[in-house]
Length: 234
Image (cartoon, rainbow, N blue to C red; front, side, top):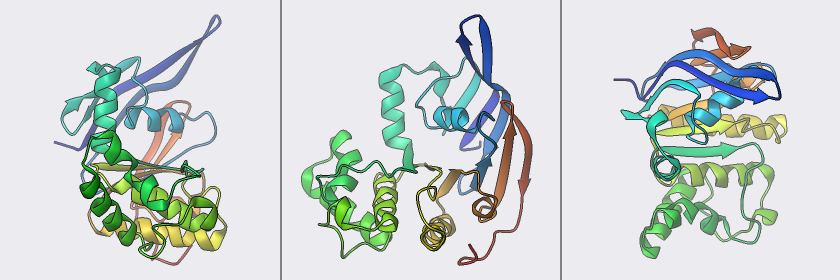
């Protein structure tokens, strides 16, 4: 059984008298450990697909199983629980709390999950060390570079040891050198066995992934696997 199983997934919005099919019958399987780029122009459906994969929204029609759980049947409380348990998010804008330290930002998912303080601290330390920020744990976001802030966001996404890491344009606010460093980090996480789905509009970033899914008009246009670009090539 695949980690992600999607069948005939549709998301339909009513805009006045017009029906907008943001997703129009998507089929997709992702196995544990895959490294997938989701690409497409604005309006292609890639962001809608990411929201559904991340359990931030539910489909209008179709089926989505995440680690065996039928997501389309869940209510809001159950969706929140599966998000916290199964999914780590990395966003283009980092989404860090400005007045708290890197450590406290990384601890947040564990606070929501009800872990005791000592356990939270140890897991957050491990996650920050894993992304190369073992010496920046007490720094606030405004004391960190853009690349370091994104590393904090990656550590926060990893701290619960989720089944899937979802990254939405994770290099969009970074210069080319820092983008390469962040992609090196994703490459390392993939090599360690993490399942990563990365939304991007940049072909050179997508080429770092081992599989590229290209969307157009709410459908999957192509789905191809390629040899990954060597680390440091971006």
